[in-house]
Every structure is written in C-alpha cells, then in structure tokens.
Length: 124
Ligand SMILES: [Zn+2]
Image 1 (cartoon, rainbow, N blue to C red):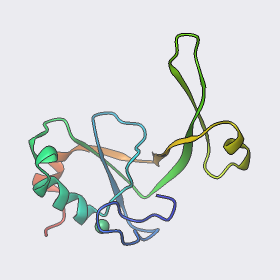
Image 2 (image 1 turned 90 degrees about the vertical axis):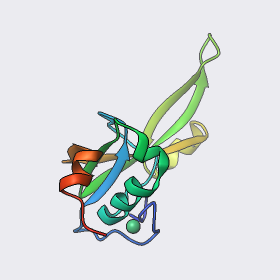
Image 3 (image 1 turned 135 degrees about the vertical axis):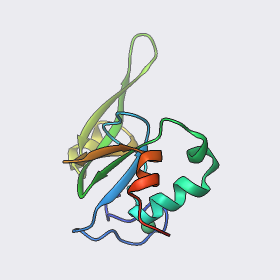
C-alpha cells in the first residue's frame, strides 16, 4: 500500500489513475491494498466469495492516506486497545506493535460492486 501497488497483480497504480478498494458497505478504511479497476473486475468475477456476496461495495478514488494501527495496551477487561498513528511516525514504534496499515480513501465515490460490474467496469 505504501508504494501504491495493486493488491492483485502487484504492478504500480499510476498516480493519476483511479484505484479501487473492495470491501463491505460504508467502509471508511481498508486493510487490503487498492487494485486497478480491471483487476477489481477480474476479482469480482472469479473470486467465489466476492461473487456470492450481495453487499460488496467498491470505493473508487485517486488517492488515499495511510495510517498505522498499533496495539497500545490492554484494558482492565483484558481487551486489546489500539490507536492510530500517521504512517511512518518514528514515535509510533515505541507505542506498540504494528497491527495493520490502514488505507483511508480520499474524495472517493462508492458504488455497489454488482452495479459497477454490470455497467461501469472496464471490459476484460
Ligand atoms: Zn492490478
């Protein structure tokens, strides 16, 4: 995600190109990297889990910001406590182990995956 590489084909997504995050409805961040629109169309057609799901939503953007989710403690009830930090913040390493990089799409459009695949996806 830090190098803007597609999560499916592994090639770079141009800075001027749209990118697609695949996820559940109303997701505000993603733990999986963005993909090229053509790679998203391919995944939606060949992945049995994505093809069977009715609530897959796509977030389409050109940019995103990264943050680090780190485990920073344990509550009195023994549940893990997480905090978000800016990506690459050197002070964050001292606060706790890295859990995930989170991608937050910027100025994004959302569309149901089935609607996008039926009328907006690039042809393969
Ligand atoms: Zn790709």
